[in-house]
Image (cartoon, rainbow, N blue to C red; front, side):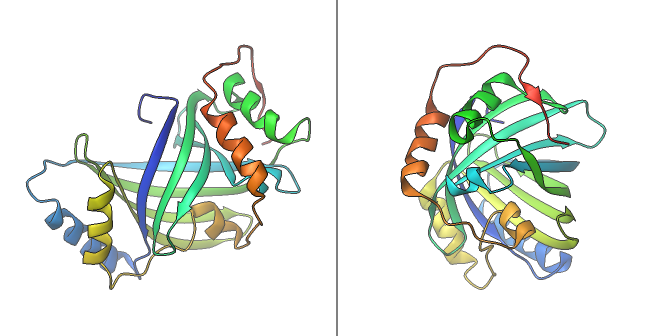
Length: 226
């Protein structure tokens, strides 16, 4: 989380062949950012994704998830609207994030999603675990190495290196530097589902307005679908 409920995320997503290759990719990125002090942490995370059974959120271009550290009683609820995908691993998204307990959608989060899907029930569409090592570079951004295990709807494993920076031109330069490294064709949810949902442009515009809406909702929220 950035401290702000809504922010623009710009990231480069790389798909190393194996852990040895991932370590090499991270080392090359760190070398490119030499001179910037990095703070390293490693955490065990779980992510649970929700949508309607007919993927109404996905049709608006929105991915909704709860992510939390293993053993925690609360986590971060995120609604992400992907707005830019250059086809070469760089993504831009509007994110609405709020902290809350694991078994209930926070009121402000649920209210935004309900404006997109009405009263349709939510279901859990995917569940992932990953070991994330992060190198933070102050206000510049961070590098994340994710060792991902998909628990549902199917069982697969993959590696991903994410680079999230505030400087878009630097992000583009890093992609050129690592032109030989395969990129992720989609976000983790897309990789887990292995399916594409056609996005309705009108609904996508509505979703952007909904996520950027400064009005907040009060109340207990609603039960999570798990």
